Image (cartoon, rainbow, N blue to C red):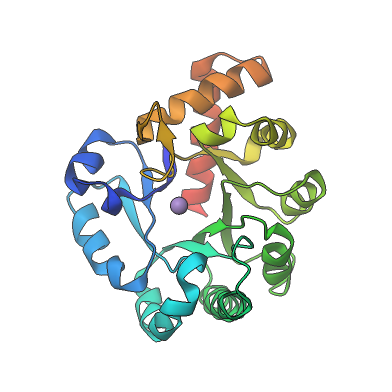
Length: 242
Ligand code: MN
């Protein structure tokens, strides 16, 4: 298995969380540029865990001043996330800051090429896809839409743009999440925990909880669990080799 979106640095014991991944390939997403160096140090002892440079949209207004640091660090980061747009906050100034930050981040990533992006798009799937489309139909790198919760038409559009979708245990539990997963092409589905934000049985999700999504996918696709693991791990390998 693998974990395409895990906040290893935000668990009470980040090293223990990394150790629990037990060699599983994973992306360590961060929420702010100042966390990247620590994430690199943390991941340094776990060769399968790849640190990502992030700036989460929910804090874009406060973090916009850190955009220059993000851009300085970008040449050192092959993985970028968590980035994106979040349509939940009604604050217009915050929304404007999100748009400016996301446009600047995508612009820099497109120019650099070869980045693997993990993108948040809650209640903002269309603006996220519009921003990606502004850089051409095929973004020069791999795009993973994490915890995708858009509508069916947005999912079709994202698929047409070459996006991957990382699915987590919370999505498998919700009716809307299951409906969306049912429409995702098999060759674009990845696993994520989004721990420690996503919870499983009242505790923070761990990379191994990808098994819950595998069980769901096995039923949905009429495949054995090992076959599903091979398929989605193969998808992740394509992303990593991109
Ligand atoms: Mn996240």
